[in-house]
Image (cartoon, rainbow, N blue to C red; front, top):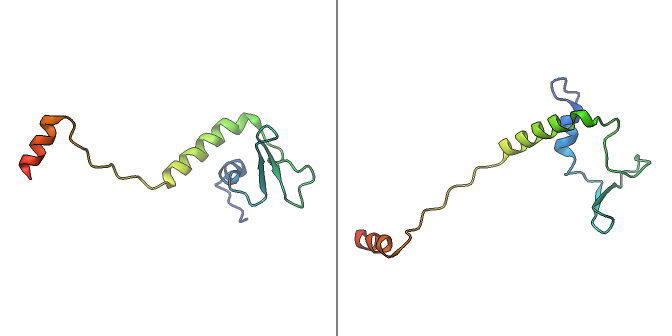
Length: 93
C-alpha cells in the first residue's frame, strides 16, 4: 500500500477491516473473526499494536467516510392518504 502521511494506519484498518479477502466469520464460535492470511501466525483478524484508546475516534472517522461515499436515495413520491385526499387527486387528473 502506498505510504500516505495524511491518512493514519488506524483509519485505513477501520475502513478495510470488514472487506478483507482473508476474513473468515464464524457465527458458531460466538461471532469470532479469523484470518486465512498465510503470514498471520495467530489466525486472529486484528490489527497489530492496536490501541484501544484510538478506537472510538477511528471508528467515527471511518463511519463518516463510509457515509459520505454512499449514494443518496431519492425520496419516494408521497401517496395521498384518506378518502378526501385520494378524491382530490382523482379530480385533478
